[in-house]
Image 1 (cartoon, rainbow, N blue to C red):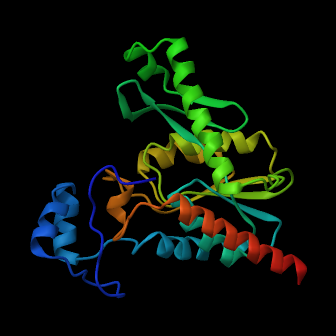
Image 2 (cartoon, helix red, strand yellow; image 1 turned 180 degrees about the vertical axis):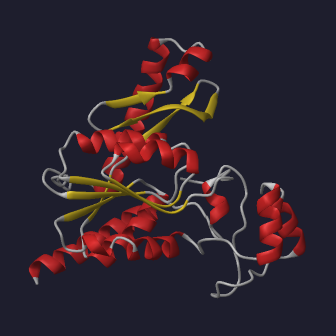
Length: 265
């Protein structure tokens, strides 16, 4: 997931205390915070996660019970791969990706009306589709366009490697955070089709309303932070720079290489 608007990034230093932001940059960033968070930020000068890597390390600590138990870590690209990489390393588990794509409304691509995932999974918001007057033919066209992009990304990220088996395994689905959770829900349905023994959804931060809805779709839901005044995933990170395709490919290469060495040993 990538931020819908600017968020505080580029903090100097490695400490978890007061970030060093110029007054003008701080003023511009804070205008996107709800009033309650503005007050908290000014008083405490602290946010939740330094960056995605920090979030992954913290999330991994809460998942250590699943280390070396026929566990597969699946990431939702792109930002979720950075978080999931740290989880996979800590759990000594293989890492892979599942690409789910949000379907945006015609003329309003940022307004998600549904999502697709591998295995011909399609979910959509019936109320929004009716309210916006989107025909079944138009919905099919939008879904097809996202399917093409989904398949392109899968090919780019994974190359020709065979897809791992989910059946009988513990699958941990990881993202960098959930706002509406629509792409995660599509991914969950796609994974369920492959009959894993146990499906866990793990994220650093999630809107509380989304958490209440999505926890019933998995066997276990782990979230480190569920703020009631959520607004956007990026607000809960000090650094939420966009993750590139190249970074995703490199992390998957490193994870695959590490897993090969583990098997050989």
